[in-house]
Amino acid sequence: MANVRLAPILRSSVGGSKTVNAEGETLGTLLIGLYERFPALKEQIQPEQELSRFINVYVNDQDVRYLQGLDTPVGINDTVTLLPAMAGGSR
Image (tube, rainbow, N blue to C red):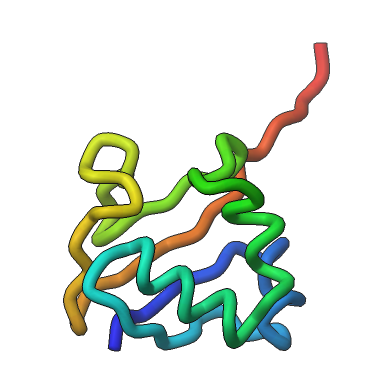
């Protein structure tokens, strides 16, 4: 199973865990399984067909936008990181 690391803001959707395990041959199938277990994640990560533009998703520290998106292969020893984009600061 792949290891899915979650940013602090997403952890409440998975019972407070920093990481969860998930299966899937591609990022898309892995996420479908994750949404079945933790439905609250779907709205934050993939409210439409594509990934939200406000979430950064990495497979083994590589941004999936520069790989194959939802079709990016995921192996059993891979790490998927879900990291919402942050904004803010002061002038």
